[in-house]
Length: 501
Image (cartoon, rainbow, N blue to C red; front, side):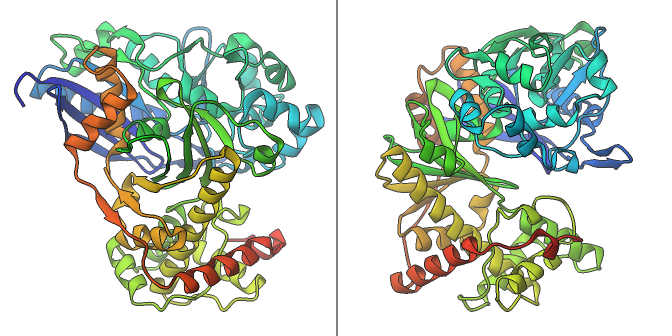
């Protein structure tokens, strides 16, 4: 690519991390994998934790590899939301951050409602009520000596930026996931911080995407072999925000699914939707790039199959995702369905047994073979996507023309086709590495190489091929499946039937 500028995207996912070169010539962008690594939580007597010291060492290794290849203009970091690290007054890490799937936040949402009204929290933040949110993680830490000595809270991308530059900042799109961001004031909510007895000084100042944080610390530059130090730039650091930047859509009448461990399903709007109906449907209004609002819901996603694979591997049965998709294709439609977002499926554990118990509790014949489990997961996800997209359109007053799927789930052609079939809408699938692309293109925006979100999406359309799935199958059959799925969601399943996985 002649006259190209090279950026480095650090994309940290809940299952793996990636460091990628992004080369942009003004018309097209291309990616090159530099370094990939597993991101595996560690269970300790104190709970489930992220090993952030290993993560930063892997980031530095990727940076060193990239700098050996060519000159890097800047570096941007994105990751999952809500989780955080605490540092003391000397800038030292106090402990490894808890994982959002740790059980310490059970019951925290209800405890918060005893302190502040639910409607008031939603009116301030516009964020869905999930017990994994930073707000409830902080509430669960009440009385902890860690909070007593903490002087700074960093979300995961901001922690990486701090380790690289020493700068104290919190990027806007990820800040909004915490349920501590005040939509009206555009800063941290003092009311909510007081509600969890946390001083506002603990949280870093909020900055927008495309903000320059400076260059590498001298010690880091020496460690990675940086003869010329690249700038560190905030991107849309919540990974879904970066992925939505790279959705190759025209206009605003599309829905998106950022499909991976989680599936983030929603629409892009000019302003938040803070109605009682949106709150009762538990939709979230997260910050997006270019002044946009990501109006969406979290759906459990391919986590269900990841945990099934992990369980079967422990039994000596290793299945690739491709093999499970092939086995699922051989299974007749119309089998058991689950609500992917049932609380029983959130924590790590024996997922096949949990699915089995859910099916029995809802009067369905449970799957037995891996292909049947995979079919159950895929059909249930496709039907949940349809349900959420229909809700989003109704709540936002938006007539949706197509569904754009980005992320790792793009490779799952069966799930993409099922999504089109269930929603009776075309599905445009791609690009796979949307998060890294969005990360790179926000860095290009920071350098003045593109001028708007629309410009970025035009670059994505020129640079990457996509696949389109038209609705297929019998519309009547899928209508019957949708009706059966909604009955399954309406069934109240006692949690004690599903525990012990």
